[in-house]
Image (cartoon, rainbow, N blue to C red):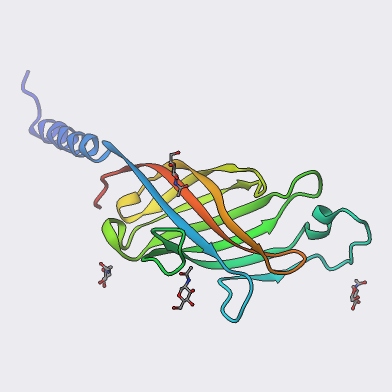
Length: 187
Ligand SMILES: *[C@@H]1O[C@H](CO)[C@@H](O)[C@H](O)[C@H]1NC(C)=O
Ligand SMILES: *[C@@H]1O[C@H](CO)[C@@H](O)[C@H](O)[C@H]1NC(C)=O
Ligand SMILES: *[C@@H]1O[C@H](CO)[C@@H](O)[C@H](O)[C@H]1NC(C)=O
Ligand SMILES: *[C@@H]1O[C@H](CO)[C@@H](O)[C@H](O)[C@H]1NC(C)=O
């Protein structure tokens, strides 16, 4: 029985697209480390509080007092903890004080965008819980752009240094170690 030529063509196309997909779905693993400068005080803050609870807190628990505050950040990412070292990107996003009891914990929603070096123009995004007083905090990497398309991964944040600016806020330098699986997708 003769195989219809359209069917042959269809199979050829399917085989071709499968080959392409297999190639595209080979993941790469990238490890990056950098420091994030979170400056809340002084004339040029990089993180600003934009909202807090409307009702005044009357208790004595400092964590409960901070619950509900929301800040927006545009923090430089540097190669060393020194804020004057080379800036390789910016962390733009929102963090909210999301715990009422026991430990200070933030909900982080941020995108690390790179502006120089091998990742220039690419970004990856983090959404997760950040119990900031713990020595090491792990947060999930949920996606990315550019070379980090289809990213999945995790990062560890460690507070390198911090300075109390007022009763509730601190300038800090946070070290990040990120491990990212991403794919070589070009279209
Ligand atoms: C909270 O306290 C501030 C300053 O003490 C006051 O101006 C404001 O009206 C209070 N808000 C509420 C909802 O009670
Ligand atoms: C960064 O540079 C500024 C301005 O030159 C200087 O005042 C500051 O001490 C430097 N900071 C560090 C940590 O080197
Ligand atoms: C980063 O990429 C932008 C856009 O492609 C380009 O204009 C810029 O020169 C690059 N910067 C560095 C430091 O490579
Ligand atoms: C990343 O992890 C390594 C190994 O634990 C550590 O030596 C390094 O200081 C970490 N980097 C940052 C920026 O936290």
